[in-house]
Length: 457
Picture: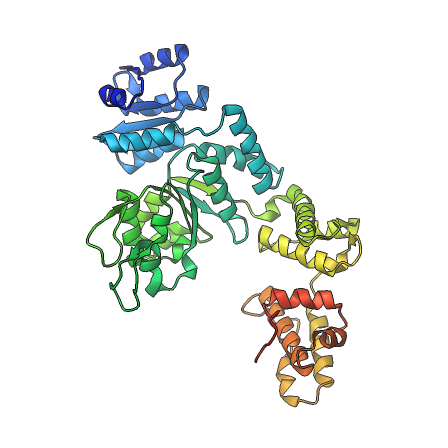
């Protein structure tokens, strides 16, 4: 090992025991540490824990010929930068050290950059967010696979992107893939790529998304949606760091860090046979649980003011403030959609507010009985009796199967379409009939993707 490092132009010091290693660390500055797992007076994990506590900026990798997933997870959770099975060839050693020694900024500049990134991407001062920041800094230093879980809208992709930007892979690409958004028959081609002529429609070579993450981070959102046959292929890719495009007889080496996420309980899916246990253990080395917004009460108003300022800035209008009633209303909500839902509420409020102060009426969605009343009024004013289907008999005991918010949005969209069709898509007249401002109508059209020049329904 020392001879190989010397040929690479790297000066090294050898310690045969944990005690010697600690003595070297006390008298000499090092840029990286490579440690065997089994040592005469202890093990490498103990050394990792010691370095993590007293030399926090020193990356350390554990090498062993007796590796298994449990030991690897223990080493990575103790703070190891990486865990490598011996024997390791010179090429892999070079790649390992290149990552370990990659410090594009000075230590003080790096700290400043971390603070700026946290401020920009992790808004909040609650205890849960402070703990999350500490965890992310530790995780960003390693190469371990990361699994992020949390309710929908808690910011899983934001956290994954922050891990990438705080890591030594920040000069590489961050490739985010929503596994639930890719059709099953296109999944393999999208992830692994294909060769020209490998199947009908393959008119040229295509680079897969996994290869696009070369040197960077691969974020697989909603990984639970991966079909079982794709889980097998992904497992081999994560293990071997190689891919084989469709129609190719050669494998391609790929270097990436995998970060995955799901709002589902993967362990339950494993027990149900819907997710492979071996893949679960491979991706679930370092785990992050994102707290729901209702458990971050102190962050709600902070996020609301941040979104209001950001949206106003994007739209080129004067920033808006909240009155006391509006702030009280925001604090009282449950937020099943979490941060994403809060942002949508603030965006709607900024749109509806013509003055400088956001009030409670700008934040509230139209009550169900009021929407039903509007629908009845619209239908009565129209001679076309076929639109009577918009009017639904709703009682207080009625529980929509798709959830209240989706149901109300469905009614709202139907009312908008009916009114626009009755005015031949004259938006000004439609806004007048609906007794709302043109600006408010325009917001709703954009929300439901109806803001096109011509519509045919």
